[in-house]
Amino acid sequence: MTTVTLRRFIQAGCAAIAAFALVGCSKQASEPTASAAASAAPAAQVLTVGTDATYAPFEWQNEKGQIVGFDIDVVNAVAQKAGLQVKFVNTPWEGIFNALNQGDRDLLVSSITITGERKQTMDFTDPYFDANQLIAVPADSKVTRFDDLKTLKVGVQNGTTGDEAVSRLQGKNSANIKRFESTPLALKELEAGGVDAVVADNGVVINYMANNAGSKFKTVSDTAFAPEHYGIAVRKGNTALLAQLNKGLAGIKADGTYDRIHTQYFGSAASPGGASPQAASAAK
Ligand code: ARG
Image 1 (cartoon, rainbow, N blue to C red):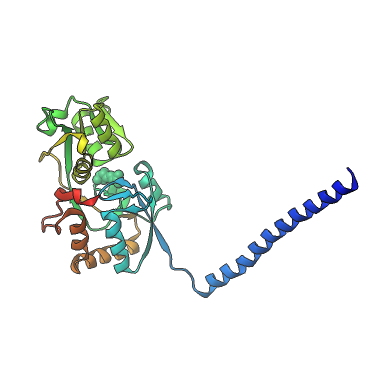
Image 2: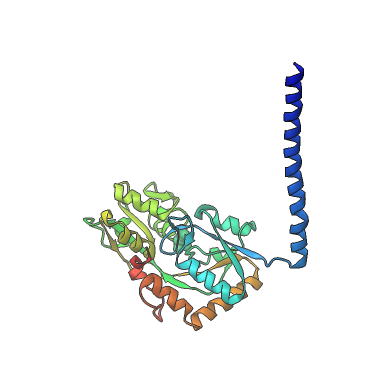
């Protein structure tokens, strides 16, 4: 190495060290500020809400990647009433209940049907929406009732109440049950002819058809499907949060906020007997 290059080498090294020191400095500088702020006013706890945002009009991601939908508006309104702070985190349906139970999420809103089995492992608020299973088939299908699906290839979202219904009809291990990660994926497969029917929540099926004119489906309803009610889920035994959420929910039902949100998404206020998502097309 010549003297010149050696000097350059040392200079370069100094520059690197200086840069490193700067980073160290700015980091050190920011730390006392942060801790000072924290000790001055402890930040209000922000509750993490898990939602599988593939479920328009209830929860989906808009073009900007924001999580939006009926459930989101309801929980935001409930939180505001109850004085809670919330943030929504997209959480695949497959792991959503584990995420709650392991403490990665504080509550779930994801068009979750309150069922006896689920109540064993988590707690639910009062119902905030009524739903039922609906069959989607190609427009020229001969299917007229749920029983007709006994020997057909049926698409469902894995682990949903639609999956449970078809599992009861065909047997859990039936090779004719095609389980998908999301309901839109099951409906896409119906469009492609890979399955003969899809069984899923009525609101989502109706919304999909309204927004995919090319899908050429018709729906078949059947009273064999038990009425379902959506609830917000919290960890089992989290009675404090449950009470706050129920209070907030009662509040937005009483002051007209719930009806306003319902009208925005479904074109009418909730009927006394429950919400009917017939006009789900309004949501996109
Ligand atoms: N209501 C059905 C159930 O609870 C389906 C819910 C699916 N929700 C979702 N965001 N993917 O099983």
